[in-house]
Length: 82
Image (cartoon, rainbow, N blue to C red; front, side, top):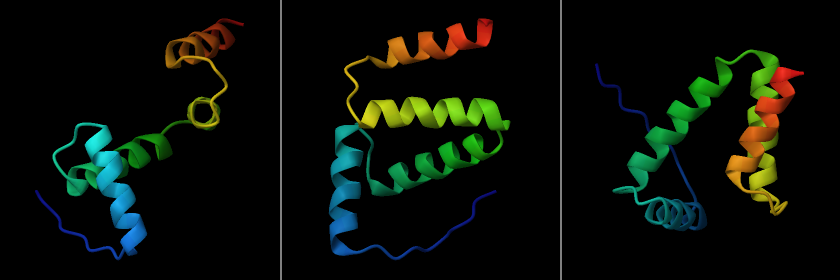
């Protein structure tokens, strides 16, 4: 089943979408938006603690803590073992 949804974006937002899609190697901004929605739905379906861990890892990636994604994943796994 396929559903079509409409959204309004500013010119600046559209440029950002195009840049991000290109940077990720996606075909176009529509593919980026589909992946973002899928990610959001998956995130919402997580329990609270795992969801907060994922959001913290994302936050760390964006604020350039100097740690790699692998290091952040190892940190979360180590917390799970405690």
